[in-house]
Image (tube, rainbow, N blue to C red; front, top):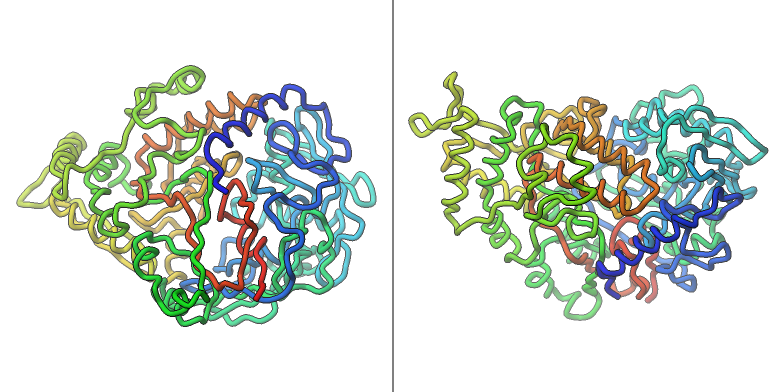
Length: 602
C-alpha cells in the first residue's frame, strides 16, 4: 500500500533511461509524459488506482468552512465552490496520479509533438459532447485558450503568451506552435479547461457570475445556495462514461458540499451525520476525538492514506512589498523567534514533522545543512552575489532550546540590531523611532493556525515586537490577499514531483504585483527564475532534478515563509458506505482521489 521514496527514485531513473531513446514524435499517441513515455499502453483498461468494477450510485456530502459567491472559478473575481472545474469541466487530457507527470487523452484522442516539443497538435474525439449535447469543437478549444489567457485568472496568462500560432489542421484537429523553449507546454495545454464558446458570447467573462459553465464533465451543477451548499448531479448522458481513462472514476450520483461558519462547526456536522466525510489535519484530534457513537458503532471508518508527494510549503508568509520585511535579516530574525517545537507540541502533540524545504520529503529537495554540490552548485554559481546565506553552503531551520527559546531569541536580537532595530523603553524601534509592529491576517475558523499565530505573538513580545492577529471572513480574506493587503498571513503551496510552469506563477517576478497572483510574498529573484527556465528546457532528468534542488535552495534561504508542519499521511474519516480502491496512487489523498475514485456501497 505505501509508496516510499525508493519507488519515486526508480520512476525518475526510468524516465532518464527512456528519455534517451524517446521517439522523435508522438503521432496519434494516446498520452504524453514529461520524460520518456507513458507507463500505460494504448489499450489500458483503467488507471491503476481506479476500480473499473466499482458500483455506481449513491452520494457523498463534504463540508467546508466559508462560502462562495460565484460559479466561475476561472477568473480573479468572486469565490467559487470546490468542484466546478474538477467535476463539470474537462480538459483535452487527464492526469494519472500514479506517475510523476503523465497525461492520457480525454477530450483529445491523440497528441502529436516533435522531439523539441516546439508544437502540440490535438485531435478531438468525435463523440466528445458538452452537457447540453452539443459537440466540443476545435473553435471551443482555441477560444478557451485565448479567453483564459487574456481575460482569465493570471495563472493562465503565461502559457498563452508562449503560443506563437493557433491553427485548425482538420475537422477535429488543432495545432499550437510555440515561441519559447518549454518542454512542459504540451502538457500544460493538455490540462487547460475547455469551455463552450457560445455560452459566453455577448457576456463579460471577467464578471463574477452564478451562471454555471456548460462543461463536458461527468457532473452538472444541480442545486445551490450561495454560502450554504452546492450539489453536483451525475449527467446520465455523459459522453465519457465508457472512456478507459474514466473507468472506475466518478462513480457517485451526487457530490454535495455544505458550507459552515468554521472548521469546528464542520466537524460537529460530521459527528451529527450531516456530512459523510471529513479530512482531519490534527493528529491529536484524530487520536482523541473520534470516539463518538458513529465511530464506535462502525458506521464511520477512519482511513489513513499513505503518499509520496513532496511536503510543499505551509506557514506564515512575509509580504516583502512591505518595507518592514524587505530585509532578509528581519525575516530570519522572525523565523528564529518562531518556536516551532512549542507550537507543534501544543497543537499536534509533536507528531507531524516540520517542513524543511519546499520540496522536502522527496528526491527533488535539498538536504538540510548540506552544501550545494555538482550540477546544483554549477547552476547557482552565476548568482552567487545575490544568493542569501545558506543557499550554497547549506541551511537548516532553527530548533528551539526549550519553551523560552532563549538561544534563538538572542540570535534574533543580534540580526535585528544589524538591520537597524533596537529596543527602546521595551519597544523595538528603528532609527526614526518607529515601533516594529505588524498584523497577521487570518481567516475565521482556521483554529489551529490562529492558535499557532497567538503563541507566536507572545514570543515576539520578548523582542519588543507588537504583532496582532486579525481574523476576517472568507470573502474579506480573498479580497485582501488578492490585493496583497496584508503584512503576514497563512500560506500554503502544494508542489508535485513534476514542477514546471506553475512555479513562475508562485515565485515569478512578472506576477509579483499582479492582483490575484500566487506570488504572495512578492519575491523577485533572477536565480529562482533561472532555475525554472532550466527545469522547463531540460531533456535530462538529472539536470531537471538539479535545477529543482537549486530552486528549493533559493526559496528556502530566501526566508519568505516561516514553515510549519506537513502531514506524512492523509487522515479521512467517512461513512462506511463510502469506499475507495486498495491500490493507492503515488500522490495518495491528493486531487483526483476523493471523490473521483470513491464509490458508495451499503
